[in-house]
Length: 261
Ligand SMILES: C[S@@+](CC[C@H](N)C(=O)[O-])C[C@H]1O[C@@H](n2cnc3c(N)ncnc32)[C@H](O)[C@@H]1O
Image (cartoon, rainbow, N blue to C red; front, side, top):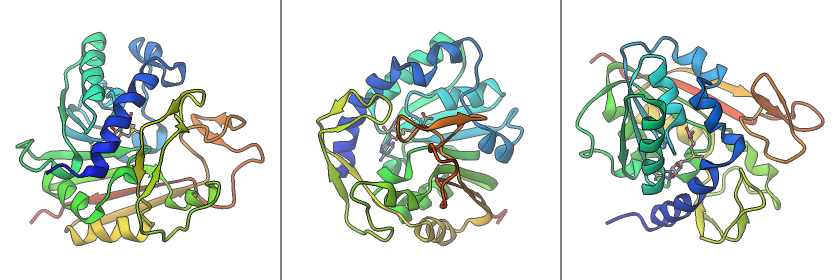
């Protein structure tokens, strides 16, 4: 039985991916001319991927997945949105790269892909869509080879205090909204209901520990991966509010490893 909140998000993401596909901020043309969509945090942390198998969870139309492929990884991307996977397959063909794209809810993935990976990767705008972090962490652990590495870089959950009105960092109920702008194209209103989930950092970390992974590094950053508001400025591929770096983190990263046995 599909998760009904995730199903709502699938429908919303089918609409959002079409908005993003053609949006200049997403730099599709630049990507097809060789530009790498990966940023310094993940490139430095994941390192050399040449010849390594990589599973990208919640990949949208696969630009990051394909950027890893350009660096020599053997990649598989997963997303709940059928339109995202269709666009990812299209981008793969346009870029003449090899990749496998699979449509699945991340929480239902076990049994859909029958393989383990050297690297499981997830980035930028993802944990907020997952209703059950313990189940998610078990999926991550399941797909790692012994000794394999999981890396995530994403919104820091403390950014909930930027919402208007602010949300509690420890908020437990699903957050439902509709009629809100798309984050990439603020002129485009997404009428479909979306459902997000607030996960404090402790919940994410503990879920991975309980799934058997060893945390090797936790990072916090006073910069964002996209302009949260129109007046933010860019420096070295990251984004800052007009007054400069804020007094709290905008992103976190986490590197974890599956023990050898
Ligand atoms: C902000 S986008 C991620 C962008 C991504 N970092 C990239 O490389 O383009 C979030 C993605 O998560 C997907 N998603 C949301 N809920 C999901 C779920 N339960 N399982 C799998 N994918 C999901 C959406 O369809 C969307 O493509």
